Figure (cartoon, rainbow over the protein chains, first blue to last red):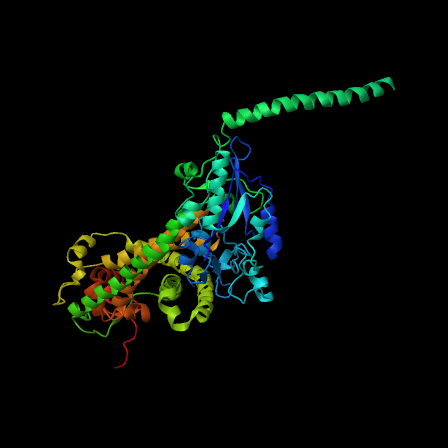
Length: 198
Length: 341
């Protein structure tokens, strides 16, 4: 089985936000919720870099650990998913997530956030695969159709890589060797407790 | 007309020149780029940002300001606190307190009123004081149970009732916690106003502490003098007031997420709220024990509001003297009718 991961090659990201738009379109993500976003560091200064970020599907996922109702589960592909039926909207997963991935439909005063929503690695949720109810709650299940996440598939510069961790790491390693530089696999150390050694 | 035609001639010529120049120059620049300057030399470095700022922040083009934080590894610390430190702290504090009280009960038994009942009852807590106490107490018990549910519920209750029922219960527990909190906050404030003057240290505290309030004297003859509240009660009062204020402040931060602070502030609010919460629960277990099972005549003070004169003389001798001095002839104030027995 594959160990699914995301890798954003920040030296290629041009902050076009196509990944964000592709994600919103693929899953009919409600207004105000961003399963994926692009953050620009040192904007306008020499050496600025943009990184596209969503749920990293961490090893020993902090969100799953702190959930008071244990609504998270990890698939055979190491994708971290959750059940919106069990979620109580307490917000703990957002405090635990190193990447700000969990999203809520409402601001959340007096515990009224609503059910948490986050990147599913285009793998749906606990409902039966590729059903209408799964789509309504969690969005498209592309993995079930043999496809990788749409954000990475649509990336115009192929900055965003999604797939088996070994394969995307080797693609990135090859790029860095060929072009002679690379600012690293952002977030990998925190998410997977390992990084891509080049 | 002439200028127009001249322009039409010149423009392509200029364009061709620029293009030719560009073709010559660009490879030179490119060669320079690959051989000399590394485009990542000035690039931001993740590890450096984490080392210097502890997190990675940038600019975002969506309205949600929280999203500008690209990475906060402190989430892993929060995970460690929430899943390793907190359950241990909570379990040790609560089970530890229950064990201590069980041992104390085995050692000391129920503390009796040495002189027996006199039949004369004096007012100890008026209606407002009892209302404030029981409002706070009821709220606290609801908050304690629903709060502990966030730490121990999935470990103890969920295996028994299943994930679906546990989720439904937890949603209601969350709303109860969020709204009953206001009754607790109000109650703590009222108790602070009502009792703060009786809870400042006085000259009897040192002696009371020295004999531990006579708690460990099995003969039950040690009754150090005390005012309206003895030192132990004062410590409970300040634990409730200071702990209650810490819980209220950190709780308000959590009721209005990100209104007053950022992600790390939210985590700190949880650390404070959870630790103070489980410690105050442990303190309150001791308070409930001594106020009910642990001491004869103690519950009545907050139950009916009156206590037996002999009980008062043993436990709050200075207070009884003060009350009697207020009335002429040594008749205790607010004498309630003796129950017909």
